[in-house]
Length: 188
Image (cartoon, rainbow, N blue to C red; front, side):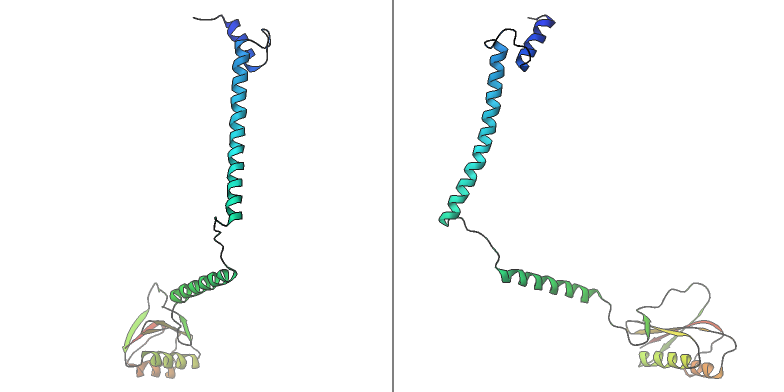
């Protein structure tokens, strides 16, 4: 059963409340009133549920049946102290071990290009490395010392001509050096 377009448009207009051609007793007006009543009842039920929930919670609190989980004031201080201790432990655990005095870095840099590398084994690698660095610095030669575990590395760049004191320091270690970059690793 199809209705002409005009009748359908008129019916929809009445349902929307725009055209009151047939009066307040027509079918579209009745449907409109039912739909509007249904929507207002749903809104009222939603607000009634919220109010009922709030009233129930109020009565439970008033009677002491609803326990509040409150942290005492000292609980916040305890939590802050524990958090600070945990952060401190993480920082201490991840920080590198303290290097000996005069050590530039925890490990030597990676050198590219030509350089002479030597290995010296002894009982006191730290003392030997510090002694060499001290002697080189006393002669005006720039020298850096690095520590990685029990291995101490001395890096220097020797300029020509080499002084007798610098040559003597390396000869005492059993090393014959030439001008240029030199790396000496002291191992136990």
